[in-house]
Image 1: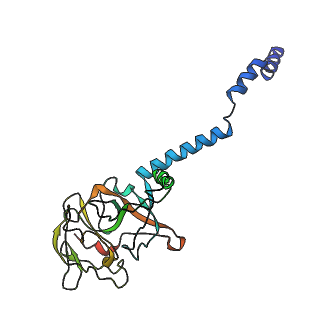
Image 2: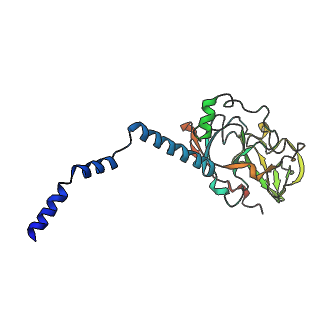
Image 3: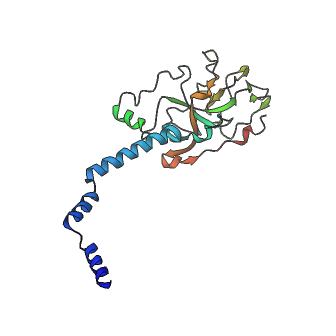
Length: 242
């Protein structure tokens, strides 16, 4: 019995050449270039998924959000917050042009196939969108201005000093009370004297309202340049608005 066991052990350690050949062929690794191509493909698919459902990079194309966001800042927009609910008052949002607000459309990447490809995979900050602060949401009323020159939402005057550009008045444009339709938002830039926002487009199709389904997501951080890097929180300004 002992000899038989020893013979079996020896036989398993000293496998036939054909068996060794089959095992070696089965375990053979891909060539390096194929592994790199596979890894790159996986990385690009993940980048597209992340861009579509979770996060996207944009750049600031103008000074309309000074001093919160300044020209050429690179920002990250997260989409998770809006999976169930829409934008909230005070959020800074990126949205698609609702009614030809962009005049002329930003061409910085439109004529460059390399940056177009990088944008597709979320590897280059996207242009051709707008970024503003949500002042009112569907069902709200908004007007300007009260006797102290403040924007009023649902009969509550807003104290906007926390985010308005230094020296900026809440609005240089007076407008009568507007009812924001359900599924829409009213937006204004923080640099009120240099922002073509809902106030400016009251007479356009849509009456300056932005359909909520055009919102890409909420700006939650500035990532570049490094000396501008920061995270953004919803201000307490709107807590009293019912």
